[in-house]
Length: 396
Image (cartoon, rainbow, N blue to C red; front, side, top):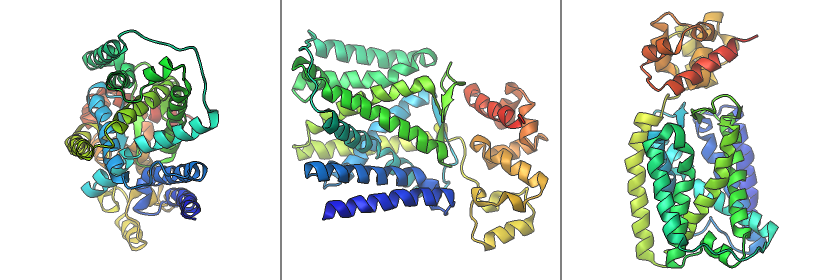
């Protein structure tokens, strides 16, 4: 009975996630990502429980898993400080909302989502046998190559950023093989490839959902991947989707490491504390270097007539994305559209208006160097995101 109840709850919450987003129900729509992912995980975990008579995610260890998952993803946020492949826009200004709902709960979905998706896929494809494959000195090769990939990624991020999504997977799988945890290398020695395939397919499927839901969200990430800034599906460069396949391998390799210490409570608690430390070390760095803009509150907007602002406040409108464009005059509408362009934000808008740039069309006419100096952003790949969006918007 509980399985059907949780499945129904997940479906209702999932539908409500879209209602909250498209109706712009404040302040919940800012956290669409967390709602849509946790409801998805609840649905898939309930389906798995109906099939296998056990829950993978929604059990006593859920809080541990959320913290560990968030810490795991923070490793890549730290790497991103160097490779600068994505940034965040339209985040809530309130620290509690941003850190708890925006970072902890959102990053906390990474391992649960890939794990439960992978297990469902695994149950569908069944066992797949191949010829037994043995790699001599696998642990040494995997860990050495993994650390080398990580090193060269950090040394030359402009060219080797893609290796970040392979390196830690090799390190964890090499370690797992060495200590006797479940590993992909161990599976291949037994002639079993189904776990590897399910992990990669799980990563690919979740990757598509990440990008699909991110595309509709207001609070979201934007990519600035070198050499692949043009051909995109949603926000992600098309070739970037191959990274999700590898990320599935990487995440399950980490989960295999995690399962190796699950039976020892002291180790589990210690790992959770370490991951919590990584989170709260990383969150301020994300705020400082990866967050580009915060969602504009209604009382921060000074380009709309004050009487209209008061009317909006009386209607309970708290953020700029809730404003009805039809209620604005031409100049106000152009300014609001400029502020919302790829999440440019109210503070950057004010810098532009101080330099007589008051519309998307006017922004499209300036060069990278000028834009960079005006808003004080030295990362040129970020600059190109906004100028390209302005030029595309300008086209009839």
